[in-house]
Length: 358
Image 1: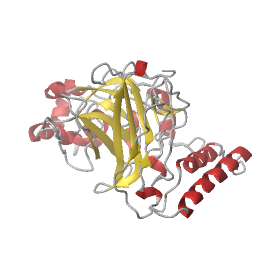
Image 2 (image 1 turned 180 degrees about the vertical axis):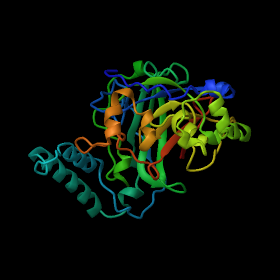
Image 3 (image 1 turned 180 degrees about the horizontal axis):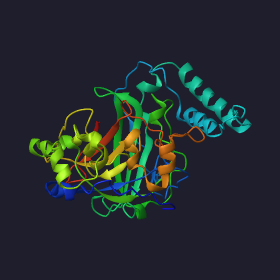
Image 4 (image 1 turned 30 degrees about the horizontal axis):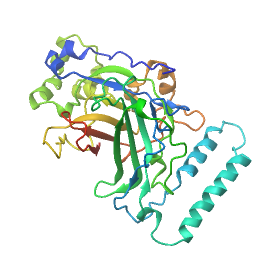
């Protein structure tokens, strides 16, 4: 990994104020994705996969919504638009495509037109090549619990929305990196993605191990009442702004509970719904969080406290650089700028996974 990102110390040591929360601590690894040029031998978000040349590329054969979202573009077009935005500078002429980019754009448009002219079944009605979402090597992410001798996790999704939850369909693959010989050089790509946010920007990672505490919704009613007791915070000498006196639980939720952003392990980011435990379809064991796919690395306002120390100045400035929001390096958006959390069976990684938008 070529760079480092460091979560700032929390403004309050949570277990000093509430020792009752200590048994609920969980390890997590914040991935800190940042735009880059990962290789197939790197852990990445949206990067090339170490995929065997002789193994079929995964396709989604689920039913897809046939109604055009109005935002459908090919992955190539999405990337070209982002490349154009990256060249934008204040007080300068609007950027234009290079001749090479124009040629690529024309070839892509011709490919799609040829497919549409061929008539039904339409692209959304055929098996759809899946897009890489994340590739995680055990050497970089030791929290992974792979089956057997596997040391590599590859996650892909179909960039169409799927009923009933209107989200991409995900697929997980475990493998041993040493077993991969020749690599598939040019994987197939879908003709379209329902939204640009379903096309992850290639990112390198700076994994950081942290200790995480539950979302307040995951706490028992007794512990929730404890967080709401302003006198308890004062008695512990916690340096908390008096503006939180009426709702001190909000301070916990913003600054002390589960960390935002892409991460492995840790606690779920509830909020879209109340806690909704997932159970393995095979053995009925309660499933555990594997990966959080986040629309944002940190929230606005006081949520900037989770921005890495190396990014604090940029986060506080709230500035965009080269058309890029620093809190959204992957350009992924799921749900209403929510999170997708992937869950796995803790007793058998080979059992089917599940996912949930939060």
